[in-house]
Length: 148
Length: 107
Image (cartoon, rainbow over all chains, first blue to last red):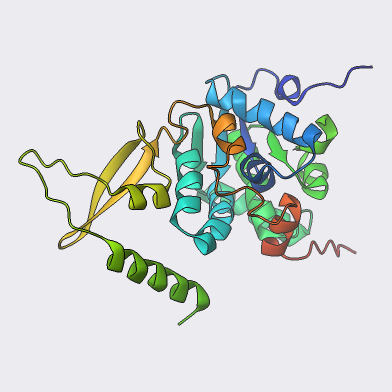
């Protein structure tokens, strides 16, 4: 039976909230070919304007940490990706803070950054794409490896 | 001074010692030195913005066209991508390192 593609799983939403790891897969190119293929299909669709990618501010920060240790060329690539058409940064609103706090208080999503990512997707009513099986399970997100 | 601060200061000092002045034209045009342009990953065709950051200092930042005629995938797969393997080869391990252990200790 053919595997369902990540794009078809995203359905007609036209946008998704992206956790940090899928963006790292896209940038550093070091994962397995099958995972890379899934991630490339997703971000190629963003680049062509078929999908919008919403990046929580905390994920943008995480994405920039390693480049800042490497120097300006690395920072410049991540910065250009985050500014590219089809990509938007989601700043946490009060509603997001409440939702993230509920997750953390109930330990349904114990790590604060994960809770913010899940809360951002829930607030925007968009699917979450992640590389974390635990977060995918807790937040009903889409795990990139499930489509590889 | 942290190691990161030290490396930045060293990079700035090294760049400053190599930099040669270029004259600003009547309409404000300047030439970005090839060495600085390459180091910053700015390529012909890229769009940049100029942001004044202090007296006599302007930050030139690329805002679009990082692939300079190439698709993002082509650029990222090329030797020009400074991020190949930069996160350690295991993206989720990088994220876990930043976010700490997942402690689901609900009772």
